Amino acid sequence: DVKVTQSSRYLVKRTGEKVFLECVQDMDHENMFWYRQDPGLGLRLIYFSYDVKMKEKGDIPEGYSVSREKKERFSLILESASTNQTSMYLCASSISTGQSYEQYFGPGTRLTVT
Amino acid sequence: KQEVTQIPAALSVPEGENLVLNCSFTDSAIYNLQWFRQDPGKGLTSLLLIQSSQREQTSGRLNASLDKSSGRSTLYIAASQPGDSATYLCAPGYSTLTFGKGTMLLVSP
Image (cartoon, rainbow over all chains, first blue to last red; front, top):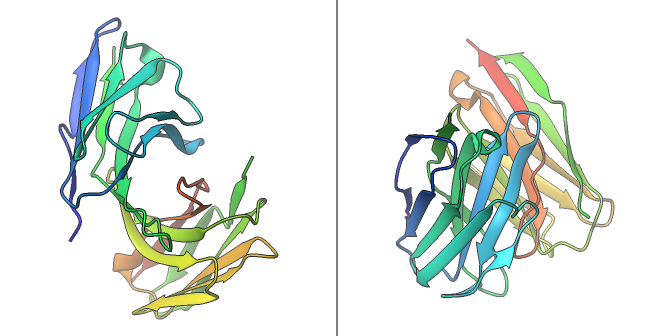
């Protein structure tokens, strides 16, 4: 089974702190994704990566950056956390087979910025 | 830009009923469509993936259909159980997915 793990289930940070959210997948997937999920807004794509050291902006990249130094690990960075970044953050990965891009999700990190 | 609508937003049924969840999307240039389940406070679990060349997929009591040309997909749940209570999300896409806001299902014993 594909396993996607996230470094923390719950995280509380202060405004202005630099925050790192880490995601690791164990199935050698090329593609990795970061989403945030908010009530009434659904899941929105922040950043994604097709390969090591590659990154693409999603729908809402402002205030975030990412790092992918190894194929299995994709980090989301909040350079200076703000209260409007309080949210559930979900990581996913998928393989490019040419016929299927099935995404597999981690358990999520509930981030609270105070 | 792809827009995804799921109807109904919430559904409450007694155990044993068969039910249909609907998903519509505006851009039919998709590669596949995935249905997910999400329990409160948890991540998403993939239920079914339908490739654009397919019409339907089945897994146990779940059956998902896809009509790409009309921008519609349905998820059919047979003989619903209390354990099916969750939010169901539809996500069409290519290498990236666009999510609907989900249908919150409650199955009462």
